[in-house]
Image 1 (cartoon, rainbow, N blue to C red):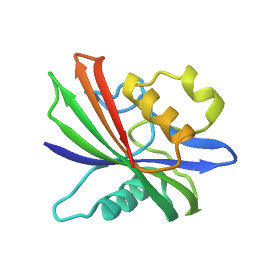
Image 2 (cartoon, rainbow, N blue to C red; image 1 turned 90 degrees about the horizontal axis):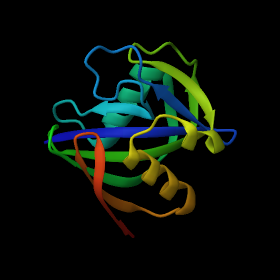
Image 3 (spheres, rainbow, N blue to C red; image 1 turned 90 degrees about the vertical axis):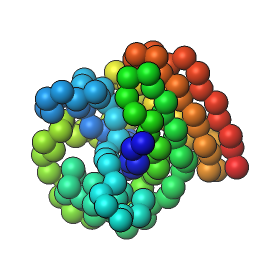
Image 4 (tube, one colour; image 1 turned 60 degrees about the horizontal axis):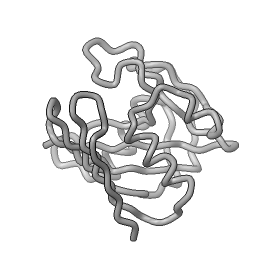
Length: 152
């Protein structure tokens, strides 16, 4: 089982997105995602979030919110539990990321990007629902075969 965080940093009706085009053997290759990554030993979700965002972007978050927990189940990859965040206050200077290209993307343009099917679902839910949620996404290969949501 893998524990991760993912954050969508907001500014001027845009999300900071990472186009995963640099890393070799990347199961997110060519996809657009938020920023984040795997927990290190003994980290809390918040510690992982802050460390990963800083490592990938050079930004320090000052205001962030846990939006949901996403459970990814796959016939290829290990089960992943992802803590999904949004952030709206930060400081620092955006730097180059060794995993891909960072870009501020207008929220209206996001559905036209190359995304995982499940990401499309939780991004839409975050836009329409302000509360906390839990989402289960089951993939066979790279195809989404099942999804469910519980809103709190």
